[in-house]
Length: 145
Image (cartoon, rainbow, N blue to C red):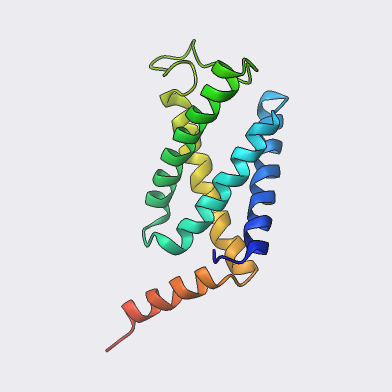
């Protein structure tokens, strides 16, 4: 994604609502902070489309690490500091302060893999320069001499 504010707004809104709808479908409810985290995460994933020249599986791994770290940060604020009790993974093995656990990190990887593919299509759909520049680099790399 480029620095065009409209692209970031569109990506943020997509991530906000996609994550909120997913969480409502799975858990039956969501919290507004999770929508914000979904929006920010999709913006970061979209930015990786331009800045990280790697296979989708590798980009998804970086995205999952970002989402897990962000979930921990938001969880500490929402659940431990504010006491909102948005989620609690205390009953999960190997959890960290009840905010993150390996099981959900694996789920984030799968969701991030899908998000990486969606971000690529999203960028192409709106002809965002990040994808055009990345495709031009790829074409030059594999062009016959």
